[in-house]
Length: 226
Image (tube, rainbow, N blue to C red):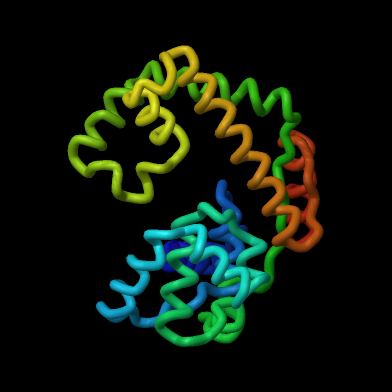
């Protein structure tokens, strides 16, 4: 992703054009602004230790709270993925991960930019998500997940993604087809809420407007800069 950005930036400079980065997840933007943390080498011995710790998430989360409260407060006690990342750093470096992550970062690649956020009415957003969910199901989401599970099992993290995990629960007989559509819609709405909260807490103050209004704001900003 960073390499693609560098290519686009170089092209925009060579062609004397404005560069607009458009995205969904705010993590990519945050990584561009702050730089990605450098991951330590994970030895086979540490991997074996991690596996032992992950066999009891409750006790491991309690350890994180004891050693690194600021990290623990940012994750759920059942967040296996982030607990594993904490263990990788702690067991490999013998440092508190919150401290390690502050001092082990690559150089940011984005420092001169303006940030804009599309704001969508909650009811309208839910209707859009409902429509999107119907389209996904009509285009064969269930068959696709069946094929993915057959080829890759349920082990990969991507099999826990919204849309996939609900279909797997449907396969397990936890609910019927009409409920499946509602589950995917509701979980996507919750994700959108978490993304808005993330944007509000992780980025500097910036314009948040409906799309048509925001377009004018961006055009005015580009006109002033040009």
